[in-house]
Length: 124
Image (cartoon, rainbow, N blue to C red; front, top):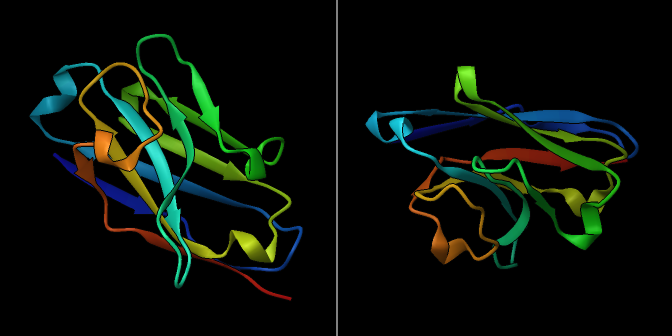
């Protein structure tokens, strides 16, 4: 399984970015959940948002609720993270991860595969 994350960049506070995570590989014949995690300098990697394949349920960490939206296009094996009203504290490397289950999890050790990360920098 390979995960390709993209869409990061530089943006001013209040701006928007859309991250994409494209999955490929034979495991895609099965249900899988995708999670977005982020890691800021000097901090632990934290869960940001997740989406299940079984029922489309989603999760958002409190700090991004109302600003971020996760969605998936199963035909393209792609999960998106639309990030609006970005704040400096959103600055981090964002990683997507795949869980071999139809249901999402919020702990990073419950994910089986990881992408390479894409950097989001929010500066004023």
